[in-house]
Image (cartoon, rainbow, N blue to C red; front, top):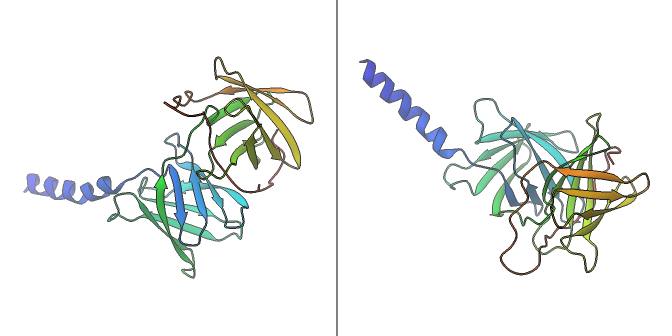
Length: 233
């Protein structure tokens, strides 16, 4: 009987493994919002940006439900409601069902495709002690996002756009009502010098640089406002 028991156990586990999916990419909610999820580090949580139909954007941290990594996650919204997202096993990872903790709100997220990486996409460590993540925005919208984490752990989301004529090399972003100018070292693509309202800082790349596009300019899109949590420059 032991081989039969093992076989049954494997059969029960197989569907869960098959249904596990990656949340990374751009999603469109049935509410009309756009959800942007940058690549994760494989840990228990990941960032997600929700851009509303008005262009305002919120930064959230989603956490995998224990034992359901890759299939179900939770996050707390701006109105302090807890939402649970569950990959629809029938969709092959292209659909997520989202429900509020009280069951009074439910939405469906549909995968739109991968994020449009650029020369500055990814995670960066600042000489100020803060960390930043450059997150592509919705395709063709002309804006993208900078998510900052201060040395105390406070989170901030800023909206960014390329400097005219310097796409892929220099961008400006607004965070905590201040405008910062970020210039990439185009030769190494491993550092960014940021100038703003205080002493210039240097960001050092934490991830491998995105692959260069085969054609066209090195660009990424985005749209929206920023959610001001606290200072992280």
